[in-house]
Length: 572
Ligand code: UN1
Figure (spheres, rainbow, N blue to C red):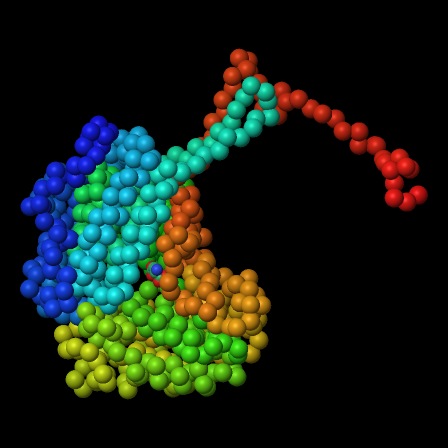
């Protein structure tokens, strides 16, 4: 494989065979008017090794798919089946991990700068397919197209960053305590990374794992969300065609429980060395427990109940804009979505009234159009959101729309863009009068609902922000730098914004949470390198004899009883 990379560095994976048409190669999304269900459903199956090894361009060879078929539907057009997903079980996950283990040895021997070039190619291919990939994101999970373009841009940014890391991955030279001895540190790849991702950021978040894992010399088994299966396949296809060798990136389609069993088997088998998981706090806890038994520390990126504090001196229109985007953008289905608004008593009425107006005027509807948000990602998220709507209580004041619940003919939304009857569309909800004991205050709701509570002192605001126990993202709107810095110090979030929304992490800043949001691991930028490498030290002794550390070390004895003489003293 090394030779192939060197001799045929311009040859794309699979020899540039255009007939191996994955979803990304279909130019169906370049113009707005081409949106629609004229594109047939693709079949997605697990890929172990490479699509060719697995058998067929869709990777859907028998006997895979023995765990049934999942239909990944366009949530804005439920009749539009985007992918028929052949679901596999624990054995497939284990087989993929073993195949990755085999490939990893060779991949780790490819010099890091060359691995970086593969990531460069990946980024360029994503860029060349930007509209097609963003279009697929919109079609499969209903994310508004402009946001989907931003999501794809996040992959490009991530690849751009890690191309350079291929030429860095620095170790250190360190002086020894003995002569004729030199110490060094090296970053060694961890081995096989099992990456399990959610579908709300179906390509950007996976790229946060894939690009650094690969550049550091690891092989990957990626289990994407089944409701974003085609999008995952498209991204993997671009990675393979960028030159990621067979077995270094494997794709497994499976539901949660079989994935967990497969992961357990792979850990027991010694075929997985690192787990990366983006998803719910509950599943993150189970994965953490499982990894702990194997003395592994997973990289966990979990939920959030991200607070936004609006201080009395805040620019209210700016805060309203930030709340609207982070609370209801993507239908509130980002990990970084705004959870609780914590508003100073003096500006509460004015802020809530402006936000209510903004929300009533916001356009909701077809995600191919200019809308604040489109449908829920998938039926299970719609169901989950409905159960949170039941938490609305008599002590709450419900604002933001003419109604709550699913948008239907009998429960319409003014100004809805498109046809509400074809998709999983929900009214936006603003709940004023939240109490700290409310479930709506304490739990991540993952839908277009935000609650409001009030505060008087900054200490109180910080306490309210920390109370639900998550710690992913937080924001404060204030014109006083002192308030912003004190908030930063007190809030337990991994990511803090001053005068910007709770969303909008950039690709080269540490991303991750504390408490219910994660175990302190960080993705992105130089910080994620510590997830995908292990420090190794080298002691190199060229003295020709055994020099024993701590024992054969030269010593200089200080005269500890020495005191400065009178003429060198400032006083008697
Ligand atoms: C996520 O929701 O898992 O900051 C990731 C943001 C995006 C990433 C969110 N750049 O909202």
